[in-house]
Image (cartoon, rainbow, N blue to C red):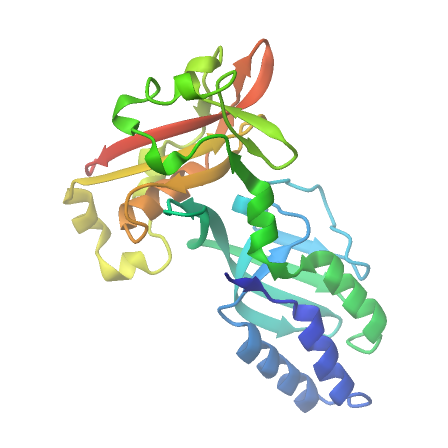
Length: 296
């Protein structure tokens, strides 16, 4: 299981070893070491956000209006570059989606890197000199630890989804469920199957088809987009649209390496929905799909 690194721990160690030094060369050495240690690694935001530019003050408090997002779609970043400014740390990263894949024994998280760029700016108390305040601020912006705990809290299925016959959905699962609940999100929020809700989620904004063919991360270099558009691709997955109309969970049933899976998951993650309704209340719903894409 992957472990989210604590950037503050490494920063504190390095500052202690260079205490009293304030030359440009020393700052350059610190920046180089941070990049060597953290480039390509994952950081977990304490406050998951949909924003592509997050700014924090010297106390680790978010500046501006938060764009709250589930941690599975807005909480994990892959570090691309770390810059040390005069009174700030700047982290350039890529958005990472926490998806889940079917397993014979347990739910397994899979970190899917997108091409969506995110920048995190943290103002420092006194230019890397007030160690205690800087580390406190960093620990408020980022948190660390294994993904096991976050994953366990994110999704608790009511039935074994590995054995579900999606060709006969929802008839194959409805008799096995109590009150149409297929599982629970964090905070014990019930997730219903489509047949047990009054209305289904309605997508707002760009269509999945439009987003599907946008270049994502490294795949556009492996295969020209024009060629991809000529191909016929099929994928199968399930996803949860929560009570706020946000995609919160993705469960992939076809091979995890599929480029089509990645494109579809990323496309859905960028959509917003009018949430499903049950007894005049917004609820979360699990939507299984098998889709075949052709070029437009």
